[in-house]
Length: 208
Image (cartoon, rainbow, N blue to C red; front, side, top):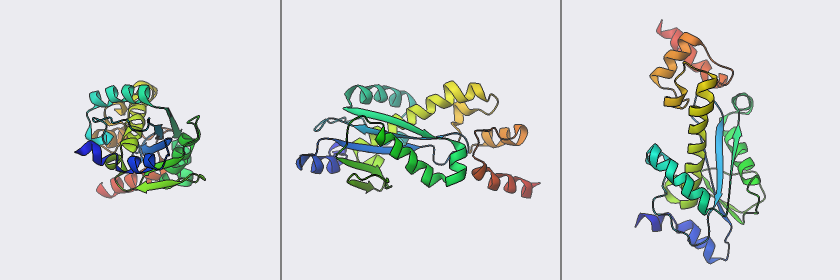
């Protein structure tokens, strides 16, 4: 059963007496606009949340419901953001890792092991990087949902109001046709990632 597969890593750690297992994931890595957002979630040892899966595989309505269930069940949870100007300075991978590190540091309890979606974090805590971790680990999937809902809410409720006309509430900062057309007509905002846009504008110039 799928939910058992998503507990393989956690079950092995719980069996070693490690109850404070944190899942960590980030969202917004491929966006042209806005912060990269990471979450860290520690769920109670032995808890099975059958519906928790990779946030990309779940509808927005279901993500919102699961977000509330995860927050309520979690021993500890934390979110952290790294803004576009920092992404431009240190690159998106390092910014994602920084956001993950900040999320772990914000937990308020000391995790005994980190399960991370295909990354390593510069912390002296035992950790396991899992490729496609958001599909293979319940803890990472829970973190992916918390991070995704947090970032989507920022797009809808904060950034779309701050920068109207770009369609941020619908495309969430990704490189859709609507977003690219808005960039050409309105130009970039201070929250656009300049390092991501340089190639975009070069491509546009080549088209005309």
